[in-house]
Image 1 (tube, rainbow, N blue to C red):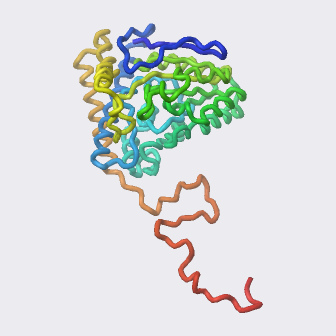
Image 2: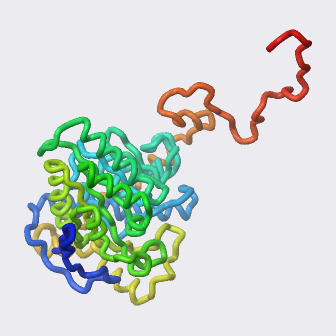
Image 3: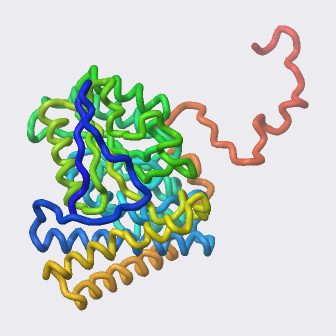
Length: 385
């Protein structure tokens, strides 16, 4: 399955087809990876799909609180991006982050436990759905604020320029975001700094065609989002997000330029979510025809069918892989259920990275001043301070 790939350089933006509600056809990827890699892609995509379906179920059963945004329909994009990253690279994402945490090998049980708000979660149950974090895996969020990840990701890329020289073994940063994020000020400020400081960072825009309930065309003066870097002489490219290998190859190309040339880049991946913006969004802004078209082009069954047609898997092997991930996610739910909830005494343990003198540890309802402060007798004249 090959995606549309378009390039844009400063002053010479290449024409690009605007995202349509759904794609009408599929073409083969020009160069497919080996059979085992394709099987691994399928398994990882299946795991993300099953995890997100069960996460939605757990939310309706009140096992998960707060906000919850799912990667349903974006599985090839997630898998391809993560396949392009090295263990030494840094990842910053928005709040739609479960699939990235799974692909970053943070542990199915630990990710589910974080959704449940339990101590065995990746952020000790204190972050929840939108705040996946694991310093060892170099996934530094999970950000709940739209665009909140962009300044800190850009700062991390700046730090890398002080830590080492450019080259094939240099570290790089990937900063993932949604299409709506490209309209906030921090996005443009970060691009400007990345350009003038020559930072090793790739900004990935996952374009669903609709940000919450507003289409990209209605929200963006330039709906070809990969062109947004032209004003800063940052090259951009748009690709189809339905095949993980297409995504991986494009991301590797940009990461290589970031490592070796300190050239920041923008990668726009057209990838349609199959559900609403979050688990509580019924997506009534989509017509029935558009919803039916999206379901017809669900990338997971399409990828499975392609592997079977190519002789990489047979029906029984594909069924076994999907049964295995069902069991894995069921175990993750059991693990999360058995994990203890963090007690209120731990609420302030991670407010600061190091101890801060006089930091408040007041709980809701605690008096701001000690009891009796208003009845204490003043010291006699000439005594006390």
